Structures are given as structure tokens and as C-alpha cells.
Length: 505
Ligand code: HEM
Image (cartoon, rainbow, N blue to C red):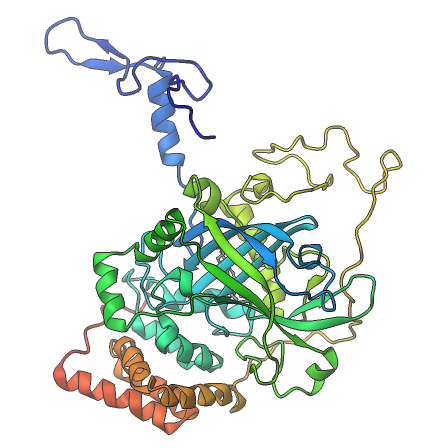
């Protein structure tokens, strides 16, 4: 609630009180005898007790972010692909909340780290919220969700030294080589954006777009492209800014919006007929692969504009909860096990981080909700459905029901262990990316960026990483090895914390 110009200062329960900067004390009557705090000093108790409760757990990944409000406007007719109401006609506008983040660093970490950027949107549509929870790179490091916690731990702090550790970073990737495509993207030119206003937003997963009730759908990949183009920083620029301006990206986006220089993106779809999926060159449920634009061109949908900074970051952005499970009729999940697992993980994280009624906070609240079988819980504030039946099948209040989901598939399968076995196919798209790096003259920088990180790992870890990149193409391994050798010769390889002791049995 914005405060009025000349408000009366009160306690949290509303009682107007005197000086907020002074405790009430029992003062000794002899000179120099000090004073005693009083339990009746509600202001002091409230002030001290609230302070250590100001923090909610930071997100276990994507903790550092900028956020803003905005709108999405449909610019192209895609009524042949989906019946989602917010996409139903050209010119239609929908309110949006956006949160753009780094992944590995904590809330106080530097914005210009070489890392993936998260690109999360919440669109407040008339059919409920639609969350787009994507990244700025088109592919991901793993394709089995059971590896997600390990992946992230290997990118974060070592359990003993409590500093990020090149050994475990590269050891994880050497032994989980399905991530090689994503590593090439990360250590290529796109690994450090110059501004969050100039990053792509990729959904990575394949989604099903369709019309509930009609038994058909299309497979779609979703992408947001910045209208001002993608801009990036070199390794040297990013390292310098990390020291001098650790909040560089957050400030940049905030200031741009304040001065009316609103960042905009165009949303695109790649649309595939489900029949093609069966014979397509790539497994379309594998998020370590892209669909090349020459096979599936980008089809424009609409424009996203961020035009309002949050009044209060904690309330609007820190408490915001995005999830790939927050879908609307006409957009549905596909049979990608990563996506399926994410649909559990995000609401689960939000219940822990914000609380079980997180959906009722203004930053998360959908336009219309009637969910009377979710009741009570901490911080309930929506009226709690008064005396409406709290059990299914009541004859006392009839409800109208929504449409069935987009074309449910019929599943006959067997329960088995998923294999994310790595084959040469995993190196094909990275190979094509290497050719592109060479064409664009980005190959040397890629090798420098990567070797600059890898050089701090133990020699055997370095050797295994070079071996992995040799599978992309010998040239890649050789380019990396050449920079490593130069760094070793010059003594610029840096030191990794290597004081770890094996744990006692
Ligand atoms: C944040 C889990 C893969 C994008 C998070 C959070 C969790 C999580 C637990 C913190 C949520 C919170 O505290 O509110 C997972 C799991 C994954 C996975 C289990 C794979 C199995 C991905 C992928 C993408 C992605 C593939 C992008 C395509 C994001 C973004 C956020 C996030 C953008 C930050 C959302 C925000 O701004 O609040 N993820 N994630 N994640 N993840 Fe993932």
C-alpha cells in the first residue's frame, strides 16, 4: 500500500505511538546507573522480533533477479494453432509479470557471471495464469530430471571449501556429456549478456498447443526474441563489471524502464505436426536439442513490453512464484520427462519458500479462481470460500466445469529406468554450432572463455574435458588445449582451492 504524504506512525496493530527511534526504558535513579528494557515496550519487541523474520528462503537456483510488470499484445493471428483466450485476437492485451535471473549465484552475487539467464513470465489471462519459465539459451545441460540437483550443486559451492569449484563443475559435465551442446552455448559469445533487455527467452521444452474439445494438437517450441537484438559482453568486460558494478543488469533494466525506454520482445512459435515428430531427425522431447529454424521457421505471435518497475521488489518479485505447470486451456505439457518433473518441482518450491497459499498474493493471484477444495493454511486471505462445500460431489452448490485438456494421448507403456545414454548424435548439433562459431569468428573466444574456467581444474579433469570436446570435433579439443597450454606456460592458469580431505569413513 503506498503511504500518504504525512502518515501517522503506528505499531503493526495500528496504535499510534511516539518516537520510533527510541526504546522505552526504566532508568536507574542514581547517576550513571543505565536502564532496563521493558516487556511493555511493544514497539521494541515488535521491531526486534520482525527483523530476523524478514527473509524467506532464497530460491535454491535463480536467486538473483530483476523483475518488472508489463503487457503482452497479440500481433499475429494464431487461432489455427490454439484456442488460448489471451491469444485469440490480434490487438488483445494481457497483464504480465516478468523475472529475469542468473542461475547459480546467490541473491547477492554478480550479474555479469557467465551463466544461463532465467526468463520467467506470468501472464494474467482471463482463463487463469499462464507461466512461461524459460532460459536465454535454447538447450539445457541434462535430459533426466533426477540429475537436476547434482547439476546445480556442481555449479555452486563446494561442500567443504564453500567456494565455486572448477573440478566439480567439469567433473559433472565430463560424466554427463549430454550437456555438451549447452556448454558450447554457455562458453560461446552468448554466455554473458550485456543487458537483460537484450536476452532471448526460450521455453526449451516442446509444448502441445491445441483446442480443447477438438482431438488435435500441434507440438510447439516457444521463443521470445528481444526487438533491440541480443547484445553480449566479452569475458574481460564481464569480469571487470563483476567487481565494479555487481548489480549492473538489475540497475540497467530498472533505469531503462524508469526513463520510459521500455524493453520489448517478440514471441514466436515453431509449430510441428505430431505426425512429423515420429520421423523427425531429433527426439523432440529431448531438451538438449533444438529444432533448426530451416526445418521449423519462427512464426510471430505477439509483443511483450515491460513498462513498470515494481513498487516493492520483495512483494512483487521475491514472492512471485512461476511454474511450468501454470497453464491455460489450449497450451498443455508434452511427454518430456524434464517438463513433467518441473511441473512438480516449482509449486513444491513455492510452498516451501513462500507458503502453501502463495497463489493468493497479489503478484501471483489469477484474475478468477474458484478452488474450494483447497482450504485454510497459513496466511489465508481470500475469504476461504465462506461456507461453500469443501468436499467433492456436493449437491448443495453446482459448479460449471472447464474444458478437457488438449487432446490427451493414449498411453500404453512399461515402467522402466530412463536412460540418458550419450551417443554420437549428442555431438551433432554441437558440431554444427562449432562450424557457426568458425564462420562468425567466435571460435577463438569460445576456447578462451572455456579454458579460462577449465584451467583451474586438476590436470586429469582438464584432460577428460578436452577429450569430451574432441568428440564434437578434434579442432574444438585442440583449440581448448592450446589456450590451456598457453595459460600454463604464462603461469596465468590461476589456482583452485584444493585443500579437500577425503571424508572419514
Ligand atoms: C527456478 C527446478 C529446469 C528455468 C527453479 C527453481 C526450482 C527449479 C526448484 C526455484 C523455484 C522457486 O524457488 O520459486 C528445476 C528442475 C528442472 C529445471 C527440477 C529440471 C528437471 C529448468 C529449465 C529451465 C528452467 C529447463 C528453462 C527452460 C527456471 C527459471 C527459474 C527456475 C527461469 C526462475 C523462476 C523465477 O524467476 O522465479 N527451477 N528447474 N529450469 N528455473 Fe528451473
